[in-house]
Image (cartoon, rainbow, N blue to C red; front, side, top):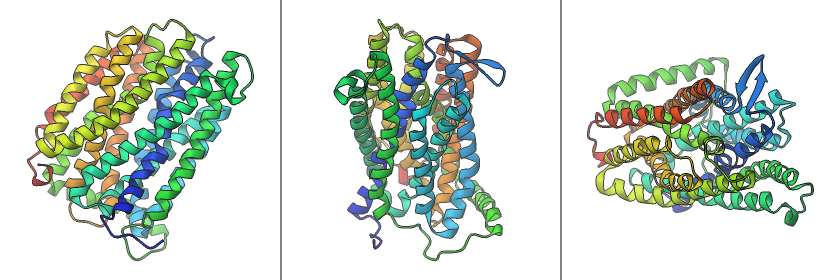
Amino acid sequence: MADLPKGSKKLLNAWAFYDWANSVYPLVISSAVFPIFYEALFSDSNHYISVFGFSVKNSALISFVTAFAFLVVALISPLLSGISDYVGNKKAFMKFFCYLGALSCVGLYWFSLENIYISLLFYFLGLIGFWGSLVFYNSYLPDIAFVEQQDETSAKGYSYGYAGSVILLIVNLAMIMMPDIFGISGTKGEAAMKAMRYSFIMVGIWWIVFSQYTYYYLPKGSMSAERKVSKALVFNGFKELKKVWHLLEENSALKKYLVSFFVYSMAVQTVMLIATYFGAQEITWASKSESTTGLIICILLIQLVAIVGAVLTSKASEKFGNISTLIVINCFWVLLCAAAYFITLPIHFYIMAGLVGLVMGGIQALSRSTYSKLLPETEDTASFFSFFDVSEKIGIVIGMLVYGIIDQITGSPRFAIVFLGVFFIMGVVLLKRVPKNSALD
């Protein structure tokens, strides 16, 4: 396929459509079905399991595994993005991580406590595949969209993602609640667990199939001349990282924005990753069936409201500027973290889900496009976006470790949620220090 010109509507839509393809992973695997499935496996073990000779709470265990996966992604993404820019084929790297993540989702079909180590490995590789592919996906934005198009294109991507993932989640919910209709045999509980396992396979297939549209139209990369990978190129990745760091020193607005993003992003991503575990353990559901249905409905509510939130945030940024909008959103997150400590009933959780959705999509889309707007003129966009992604990943490592440690020590994540509110307060303070920039007004 011949490369489409920068700013082409078809090219922008193809880029945004990857969100439709891959967003089923964070929704079905990270947020909805897998956490419920994982909790159900521990129904007879009081939420604790012996791992490497230690008794670990299940939600703390998954937090530690998640933190380790993000640490690996943070360490390898700068190197890989530097290589991809040098070789001139971002698409090949993006595909590799996409297929790694998708096939790992299929592997979750065999997840069990009896084979906990290999099971956690599939979960671990799924995280690496998803977040690794995003390094290269995000780096395409300034390559394919002009500055004035980036807010809208970024928001469109998140909107596609929320809409597409909701469709699959609704199908999965129907399979779990009405397995007989889908020909899934067994007792009610057994059939529901089978349906969840089938959901993991569907995520992998969905991700691979729909990503092909994006791959068809995206250019190979920003470099015009391809170069061969050599031993010296391994060290070139670190040289690129150092070069970007020096450029950040010269760009005060970009550097200060990255610091603020690092702080508040650790809280945002941690909330996304632990919300369902929190709801399963801390909310007083009338029955196991109500818990399963209620948690998935809450996740669906977040996704649907997030579509509106992403669009409204894009409009707000046009009127009030990116930084001012991000400050307001962070303040709202502080209130949500404080309120989360007191919720106990399903109705509380439903209301909280709606409010979280309103600011979830907005803060993600606006954070990505704000960074893109602050980039200097360069072809090495993947190297710059690796900094963005590394900030996000290291933040998640810290956030998940904080959550896991507090959860393990206290046996409850409520105090951890409150602690995450502190990160949002720090984010507000740091965002106020970002110098005014015409690209953000």
